[in-house]
Length: 66
Image 1: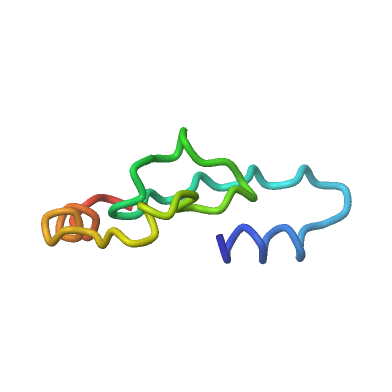
Image 2: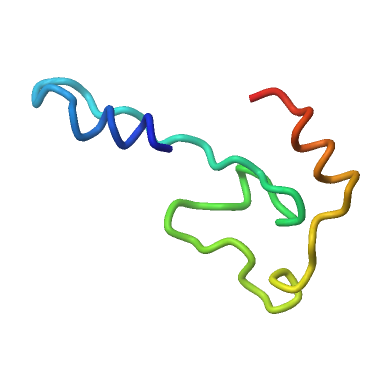
């Protein structure tokens, strides 16, 4: 996200804007890039906010390719 913001602010006026980056799925959010849209807060329900990621979800997230 930071690279996209930097490139957007510092681009030449005549170039095409960079495409918006895909959201990174977080452990325990119950979704992936297809289920989130820019500007939509993650964890919209109270049950999602109280649930923590399991150790297996954390390991899977940290081992996933970027």
